Image (tube, rainbow, N blue to C red; front, side):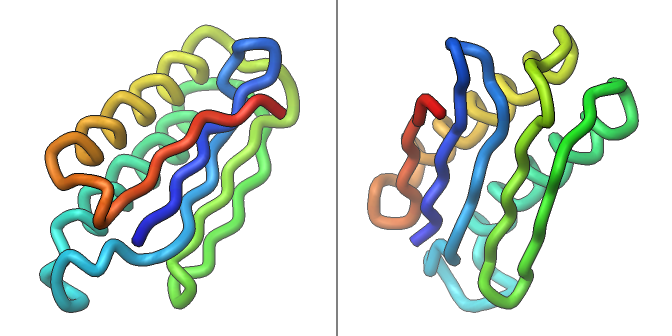
Length: 108
């Protein structure tokens, strides 16, 4: 199961963490894992390419983890990108159910 936490501070999106594997199908055919990974990586790459927001990111492919955290309150674009990621992940959660992905929102 993929465990996703969206991190907020004073109602501002500050980052996210993703841990685990969906287990929807075997490696290379797991569309749930692929979809969540694509959304997360695109969000990180977009924040890096299109904003001046500074952040920390760590990835462990073997463990299936990605942790992303902004250093300061987000600019408008970074906030939009993080909210878009949350929308996409919640959509996958709705379509594929609690068996493969768990989503939480956490105030930090």
